[in-house]
Length: 197
Image 1 (cartoon, rainbow, N blue to C red):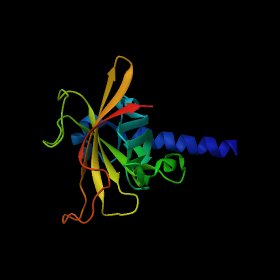
Image 2: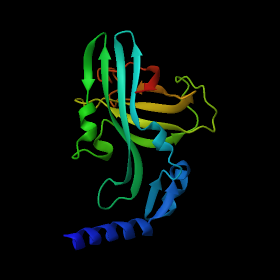
Image 3: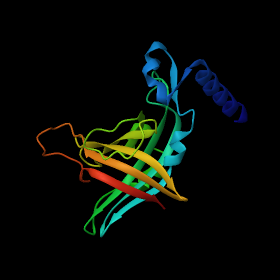
């Protein structure tokens, strides 16, 4: 059994070594390589890991985020590091969405999480409040509705540490496939501040 585990580890190691490592902040060059690994080389995702809460009266949003390394969508695809997560949304004391338990489900990985992605952005869309410098890393993620495959949005996060209090400034907006407004995320479009729990 030990020999099999060693063999599998070596194969994975050799496969990842043969792939060209492309830093996530330099993704425009990955098309030039047939095998590549989009890697969080500066460990930017580490700041975003954990449980975060936005609270406004009896309405709250909780995000649980973690980093997945060396993710491969399928056997023919390249590798990438992702920031993935799950969320809970409570509106006026009524829980509308809660997928938090799925973060620890070993059968769920990568883009099958309700929050996934990891695109570095430096400028936010005009409808997002942007208090950052363009040189700061912000992470754009996809957020999916748990029961409606057509409802999804974007979640753009900026990490801050204010005198030891860790925060995320977030812009959440609907980006659903059906444009008639009948399908959308439960969370209203807007700018939110989350505190790390």
